Image (cartoon, rainbow, N blue to C red; front, side, top):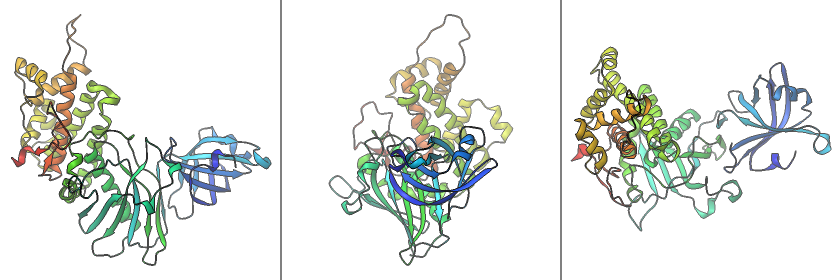
Amino acid sequence: MDNESKSGLTLWTGIVQLNSGDWKGAFPCRVSFDLNRGNTLDFAVGGSLSGLMGTFFSSPPIFVTFPGVKDEVECYVRSSRLGGQAGEDSAVLCPRFSIVHVESGSQMRRVVAGLVNLAPYLFVGPGQSNSCTLNAEGWEIQIAPIPAVFEFPAEIQGEPYHFTHLLQLSRSDEQQFSASDARSRLEDVSRFLSFCSGRWISTALAYGIGSGGELAYQEWGTGQVSVNGSTDSCLDLHHGGEMVGFFPTFTRLLRSHEQTEMVRFVLYWYIRANSDFVGPDGGCILLQTALERIAWQVLVNDRHALSRKGFGDLCAGDQLRLVFNYLSIPLDVPPELDELVKLAKGRGLDGPEVLTFIRNRIVHPPKEQNTVQRYPYYQAYTLAKWYVELCLLKLGGFNGKYHNRTRKVRWSGQVEDVPWAI
């Protein structure tokens, strides 16, 4: 194989079955991992691939069957080469989905995984511990900076994406658990840390250890991960200890299928709405979408306060006002968003109304010709993001201290009580 196919950390080598359309065959394969690549997971295959090369760039997808992997892994071709060293063909395949689960069928006692791009939270206080233990529903998750004796190879990471913490998952009663249990809990932790951080955080290189020390489970690849950078979230870096009380109540939010789908939807748009990528005006559009999904979940599905038709008959501002009332979230525009306050007062609008007013001006063309008016888009974006954070904090059972993004002057360590705790 060429040098490209030999890069990265080797996770597995062996014989795999390739299947594309009517063509199939068995080939040697090397699975490698590298955070520096656009796709962290590569499958380098070699052998006599000439019969398969004709299908590589045609419509039939390529499926790879691995020992210990329940389903076929759908792939696309990143690169290929005919007649390389010693006349051998080679190709590098990338999976369509970023994580592959390898299961032995055995139960395990603990899972160890790296965490990528989690900020250096202080979980107890400045100068004290920067480690924590999260407990929920009989599970224990230990999070700590990576110890020197357990460093991940430097060549598979860089400044944009790198391992920052080590995670260990186990049952509080020390009982064994299945790969399905491990997958579910690791997904919960990733979603929780992503919300707390305001950017995508994922586990990587997870492996499960059986009672006899054997390897019982592996995760190849990573979930969604944001580029390393400043944390823009409602949880202050100096108050990471708030995670300890928040995690068990947030986990309960994920036990219902409908609520889990809502959290996934809202979290996706909340993080995608980062103004560095879509601008404050684009962020207003995405964040209002998230808020309307929360309103639907709370008012129609959870509390049955409105029928589907009744919800649809309300304008967006009324939908948001009603759900904010249910969740004890203030309706007035925070005074430090001064330009937005001025606009709202001038038009007799409250917070939900002024937010939907600006969003509508962005997505709908002006009715009057030659009308150009500038609105405080960034302050509207700040208000919308604050609303999403408060909604998820309230629904997740949070009653601690948070970082209020509507404050005009903010510094690290500045926190206050959530509105419903005052």
